[in-house]
Length: 387
Image 1: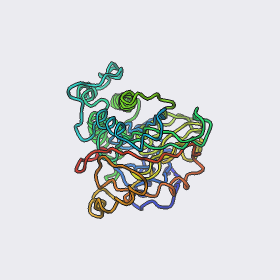
Image 2: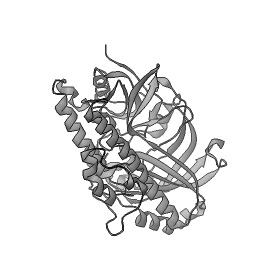
Image 3: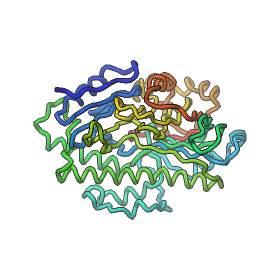
Image 4: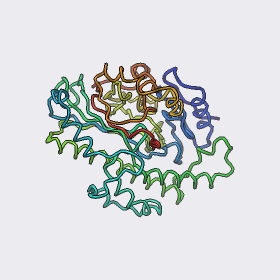
């Protein structure tokens, strides 16, 4: 019998649903969930959650292993947005965007480079590349931005009011991409008997040498991605002389070992946010729409998951064909957003409505804060996406 899954939200294209149906046909699949931001990916749709028995699926984790969100609530006055030059300078100096972006003259330092990078031949090979890109943000839908956070809940550790906050979205950069490509290709070579339309869902048994290697490499990329965000936030806040009042972060391209019905399963969240009971997470919209700080409700039917964003409703190619910068200038101005750099394929109109997405998952998370972007930096136009 095929595994079953529950869907949240109605605005999901038929191809994404077919991808989820296919994933549930795997012999290792136990159960799944489809989030309201779902759209087409490779193998598992982005916004897909899949629990497997004793197996890990590289493409169900994603190409950007451990892609992640982080927010720092700062003790800076909101009046800084009236004369934002110091904030802009901090973003321009302390971050780097684009394929191959690196701090070449003075590499960032972090204890993640002291981890065991020999856990697989691939991680050993990419260590120097990873170090050169440590603390950078990549391309595609990755960003670093300042905005106004309205805290509505006492549970964040600060009083409910408006704050200046820093929000970032990026992952494991070139190193993670190389690791994902290598192990996806290897998994496919070991599953030659799999149905052709399921080849992107080739898996490793966890108790094999290949499965153990990939799992160790994925864990290392989790630490590396977290280090990237930590360095960005540390250097930006230090540049501004700001104190960090609260930090919130989460992965959304990863696999976890979790217990369901008294059985340990491998839960893949490809573009899905962990939402176990009481767990804080971040769900962004677009460059001109709100992001949300949420607290998970622990809904077992969703495998303790929620969406990881608004989700695309239009491919990058179609967005480039459909929009010009003049199409979004009024929207940016109305929402008081200063855009430092980005590609037109990240136009807000290419995304689903974040308010509709949040309404569709009210049984998965509670909102504890709402963030409105004001200064946004992304990779320049023309960059190949890493997501």
